[in-house]
Amino acid sequence: MHGRLKVRTSAEEAIRKRKEQDQKAKAFRSGMSRVLAKKAAGELDDEMMVLTGKILGSNPDIATLWNLRRLCILKLFDEDKENQKLFDNDLGFTEMCLQVNPKSYCAWHHRCWVLENAPSPNWQKEVDLCTKYLKLDERNFHCWDYRRYVTEKAKIPAEKELEFCTEKIRNNFSNYSSWHYRSKLLPVLHPNKDDPSRPISEEKLREELELVLTAAFTDPNDSSAWFYQRWLLGYSQPELDIAAFRIEVARKLAVVTFTRPVNLRHKNVNLSFNFTNEMNHASNWVPASASDSYCVTWILRDVHINLPDHEEYVLSFTDEYNMTHSLKCKKLCNASLFGINKPKFEHEFGQSIVDVLKAQLESCQQLLEYEPDSKWTLLTAALLMKALDAEGYHDRILGYLEKLQEVDPLRVGYYRDLTAKWSIEIRLKRWIDEGKPQKKLDLSNLKLNRVTYEQYLAVAGEIDLSGNKLGKEFMHKHFVFCQRLSL
View 1 (cartoon, rainbow, N blue to C red):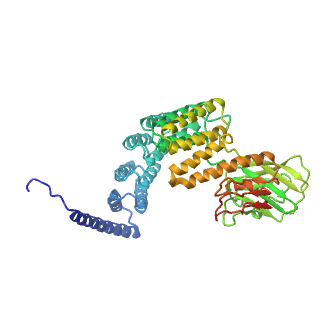
View 2 (cartoon, rainbow, N blue to C red; view 1 turned 60 degrees about the horizontal axis):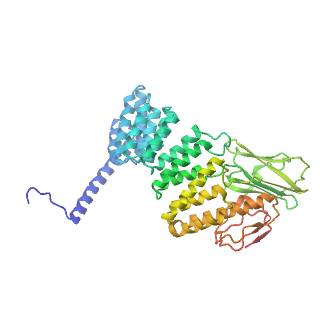
View 3 (tube, rainbow, N blue to C red; view 1 turned 90 degrees about the vertical axis):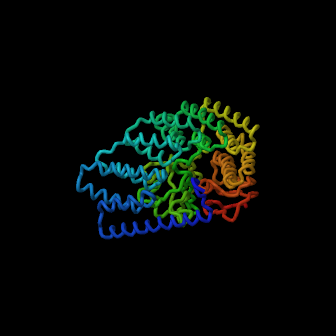
């Protein structure tokens, strides 16, 4: 009928799309063939720029073509060292490519390269461009990463960027990238001078906890604010340090362990003792896991040494970044040394922060009365209880983790791992406080499906793991000094 568009049938539409794809594929093969031929001939000229531009304009994720484009630009720039327009044109081109795919790693990387090599880069213009892009898509993490890069180049004050983050968060609490950027800015603007292991000052921490609670309770099912709160509470990877050391001369055996995996054979690493030089050769130490170059547990066998009488026995470790860590050891008997750095499983907060955390826990429990299956509220309540009094709340924490396994079955393994990790921490703290490595470390009946904190278990003389649910993957290779193991 005249004046009406013909509606294609599904079969006709499929045929049309296939023909269209075939034409694009043919044009792509032809273009790539010509590009590679010019590359082989060393023809880095204007035609190469046009050819790469046509292909990248429809598919900006071909790294090879961006590399060729850079070679062309460098060659053309050699001919005219003041040619700023050459770089400006390519900035415009990458902007066009980002409209095709705003999350193209290659296009964002090329834009950085252009600015780094341009005679007169306009960094403020790039900051303004990021602001524009983040209005269109406020959660484009590529653009957020790029913004951190260009604001540093443009020397934008951190205070101004924090204001920008706050505005974005207030517009939409579900903005993980903005929360993440905030966690990078706050330690710079509000460092904790009293405790360097804490990222921000107590006063600012209190303000942030109040902000994040508002965000979390606005939409309890959104994960962004909950993750930020975990950062505020300090749940992150421990700093690199010596965890423990033990030597038994009678057994000709020594072990040193670390809070994170290290490579003692790295050329910049140094291990030294103030009581002997015979154990300082890192090449003699072997990892507990022979297949790993980086390991938390390192063993020295066939040790021949007489322990001198010293007022203080100190083990020093210099890492790859030239940071020195030390551990004081005590002499247990004439032929034995032992030292352990008590781990910080959770931070100690001032009373004002404790009051805020208690109020937040109460709010979480009130929310759970209305939404008992809210997984983020359940997990956050468990985290808050752990921050307030891990041992006192331990049974309730385990109850919440068990409930989480029911309401979030896709992450059962994660909650079981938390159960194992937090249960071990309670028993481990008691054992470390006694300061007797030969005393039994009781980890029985904890429903463990795996063992964590091997770096501390490595110096224990007796370990009880009975009544648990350890699977086939259970490994005891880190239990270096264990002479009695109960399973």
